[in-house]
Image (tube, rainbow, N blue to C red; front, side, top):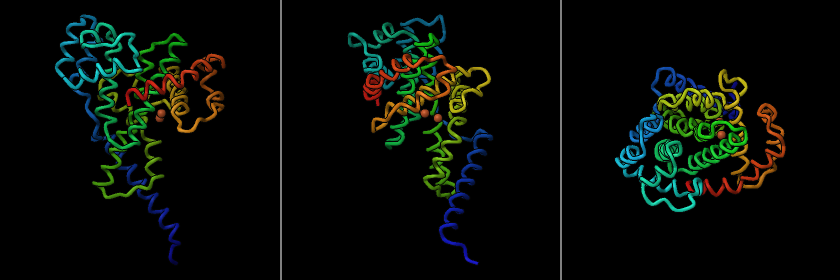
Length: 289
Ligand SMILES: [Fe+2]
Ligand SMILES: [Fe+2]
């Protein structure tokens, strides 16, 4: 008996999703997944910022070697995200006024913007805006709980970094293996694979293991073996960022019901304070992406 066309199409779409899933697993396990490289100077800047012997002058000299990095650093340092009281006009000023931790943070934002989220399509740009908003909210939560603010920022910034990498990989697999994935199939692969791909990327960038674990568990934070609290904070920041950048103003009731609020000991009035930063975060995000 001949199959109904609708059923045949659904089976074909499912077969394509399975084929991409297998090809992706194969690339991940064999280390053949193509990962964006961390720009050389950004890697050196991050290493220098963690080196206690490094001074402001040496750091400025290092950044100077990459003109695009230097220009972007001034652009970001003067953006609404850092909102300097007086404009920063030189690299030396940027380094001495912002400090090592902020310079490391900016070097990573620039690396993300120019390498990982560089595709010109609106979807990838939206992912970058979401990353920045999650970073800003993670920082607010960390400030409230008196946790490491810089680490929180990086967790927010990089939690979904696997998504643009996967979008690129899926497009490549479709071309090379000749598979055509349905929109639903692509979303499913992104949903189930982005945390692992993101964790693999930050490992290849030699970022801290805590960051890798947080990314891996940001959708099921209570299962993170050594940094559940950081993963929960990132999970909350992720949800708030989605709400804050939604095109239509959405009610925040679902955020108020998140179980992580209790685990993080965040009271309703404290959450009000974080949610009230919505416009400020929107302005900061728009100033960069
Ligand atoms: Fe995610
Ligand atoms: Fe997210």
